[in-house]
Amino acid sequence: MGAWELLLAGLVILFGLCGVLLPGVPGSWLVWAAVMWWALKDPRPVAWWVLVGATAVLLLSQVIRWALPPRRLRPTGDDARMMTYAGVGSLTGFVLLPVVGAIPGFLAGIYLCERIRLGRHGEAMASLRTTMRAGGWSVLTELFTCQLITAAWLGVVFWG
Image 1 (cartoon, rainbow, N blue to C red):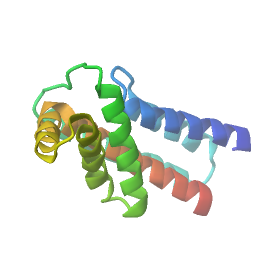
Image 2: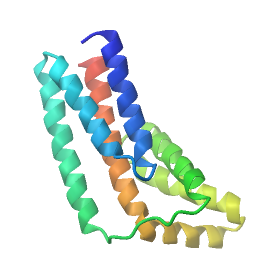
Image 3: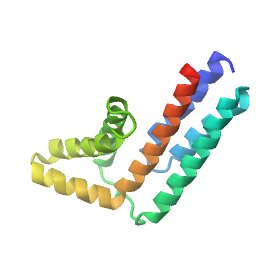
């Protein structure tokens, strides 16, 4: 696989990661499709193992998301900003405390956004609980899955 094709696959994965946080964009399926395209172009067996692992993790994520309550985040003006904070927090947590840091990072991002918007700890915590009950767990599950797939892909591309 050439450098330009690898860069294109990376951009599709990045778009998929951002798409998880945007309503209506099938972010996890974009990440999976990019990994599949990469695996089809890369002749190494490890590429196929990454694709098999990505497929298994994505299907498990879908089962978990279907088991969660069917609530969705309500569209308000603050959702884009809140999802940006949550996404950046999750990515920061994923890098600083590998893998498991994504979950507290996601929650901290939402809390920080709400703390800035509302100004008080109690109100920010109440808003965080409401957001997570309204569909935040579903978004977190999908984002965490995409981060795991991306980390496996990056590991194989750079060190495999």
